[in-house]
Length: 173
Image (tube, rainbow, N blue to C red; front, side, top):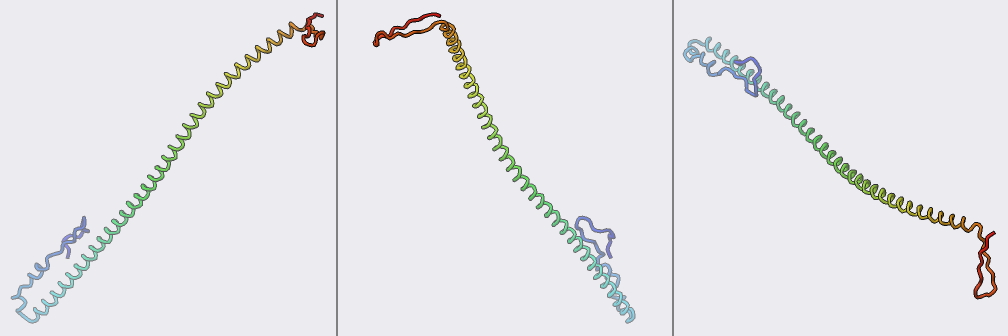
């Protein structure tokens, strides 16, 4: 018969009455008085033994139930921790891969930026050179127009009196 009727806390076993104190109630002198008393005493002891065995089985069942329940909880906790570790590991791998991709993309952006700056410089140089050439071409065109205007009224006649030295005459119309 348990002293505590509530379930044990923190893995403590249920405390039972000391079987020796139960047996002390049957003093040897009282057992020897009569045969009827001895039969009653035997029956009483059998009942006590049966009760103690039932209590022991109940205690074992409770202890094994507690142990099984605790073991199941520990197993579930271990499984959850293992899953958490797996998820953390996978997450870390993904983060690492993303960081590598980010570094690669940054390097590409920086290369693209350097190419853009180089192209802008080349465009600026080409524009400058084109502007210089355009100015030179415009100056030449102006010079040629001026020469054309000056020479519009002049006719050039070449006379070949002597083959070695032709005579060039300018005449105006």
